[in-house]
Amino acid sequence: MPTPALITVVLATYNWPQALDLCLQSLAQQQDTHFEVVIADDGSTPDTTDLIARHQAHFPVPLQHVWQPDAGFRKAKILNQAIAATRGDYLVFLDGDCLVQPDFMAQHRRLAQVGAMVTGSRILLAPALTQTLCAAGVWDYAAFSRQAWRLRLQGQMNKCLPLRVKLPDLATRLYKKFVWSRIKGCNMSAWRDDVQHIGGFDESLEGWGHEDADFVFRLQQAGVLRKSGSWATEVLHLWHKTASQESAAKNAAIVRAKILQKRTQH
Image 1 (cartoon, helix red, strand yellow):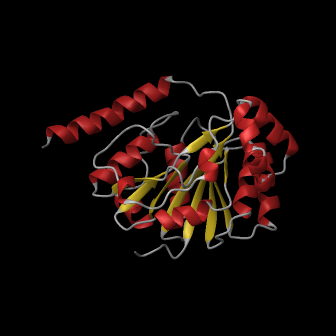
Image 2 (cartoon, rainbow, N blue to C red; image 1 turned 90 degrees about the vertical axis):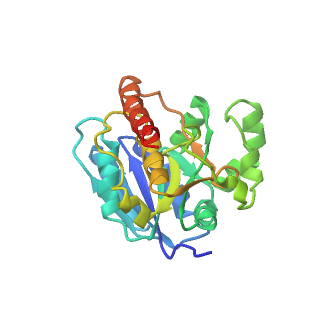
């Protein structure tokens, strides 16, 4: 099965430099180093720009910063701008509030399959653990992994077994039809040609919510199979307050209308 020549991580961020710092540290510690990072910045203030510049001075792989002015939540638009700046033939979409395991890039490369895209999963970290990690400002996966079971028993993370157990690339990972659940824009991947074929993300979806589900739906309608990255690609998602649900409901209605329209055409 062909594997990607070069992978690009499209890393979305907005005004949380402490989290982005940890995320970039985790990407700098990858076992597979044949990748680049393009940061999709939805209007962060200069402290984020300064942080990225500090990382660029010593980052082990190419690191770009693509920025747009802050005019509300416009993640789809900045993701498309970042995609245009990528050089990789395979794209991994990650959020800047997620920390990755050292085999994250290797696992996405292993799961990459022509004609398919991957939707990964996440482990949720509690507020106290998030605060501790951000205050420390240093990411050490080996040290974190050693205390994962204790943190799980303390309720500081919602699961930890996927950090220990990695399942193989089986045919059962493929979905037979579109399923809304388990789509996480903070951890998914697709071939760049497939992403460009559907025109990237739908920029009419403004405000928080469901641009990822729409993206997966349109890829599947274009003939790209969805593949589960669970028990292989888990990211550690730092806790933050939930965004306003107002735009999420509006965006969900738009996506559902697309699904309904497609069904009525058959």
